[in-house]
Length: 279
Image (cartoon, rainbow, N blue to C red; front, side, top):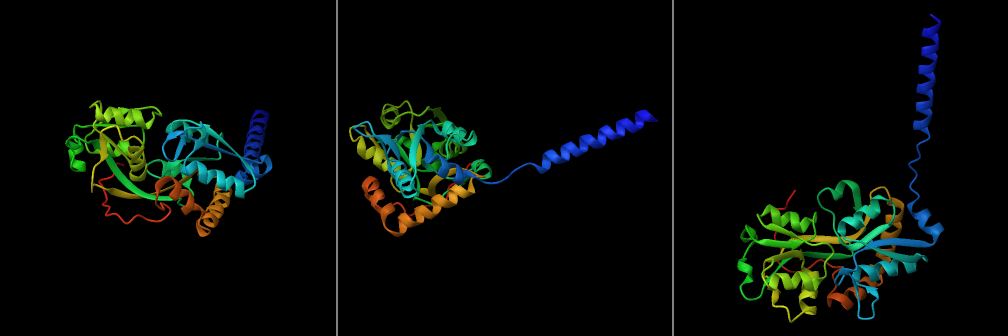
């Protein structure tokens, strides 16, 4: 009888301790408070994605997303530090709490929708394809991707789309634009699927490489912004308010014109269709 009483008492105590532990769980969002108290925003980016995040001739990290992030930090009266990773590394940095947000032409798609949130849009765009100048890489529509070699980083929505149309993935790890374009030109790969404005700037910056954007095959209207861990709403809301100020006073348009020669903070006018998106 005594054993039963002791066992019951221990069980009740265990339940009480377990219950207390649960009650102590704190879900307070201190993402903005952390930045405010440290006086610093930490931002993950690539440093290789022209013209969103790259190094200029003076070896300075610049780009549309980078410059917008710098202006946000300035208006929030905090310093900014950039940490460079490939796409997977940038996302992992958010998950580990090593970065406050990621600035690298990010949109929300696939599994990211369940784990991350996006700022108010800083760029509207659509998807296009870079092909060989001489023969369009034998591609005239998305259906022609079947059997072609598509270049890109792993686990991106662009590579998943290419594979859904039967393309063979050729994977790169944070490679520079000249490597991507040269490989298409020499036949190592056939196509690069990516954001239209990024591709337009890349092809324009490297005119000696015989590649081009496939004309009039534009699809999947998209918007990009800064990527946040889903729970960091306080910081995202602070950044969103700052981005609204920048749009209202013309700063976003001014930064955009400097990189894209057009205002990408407004929706494009091109005829864009919806693809058979990969899940």
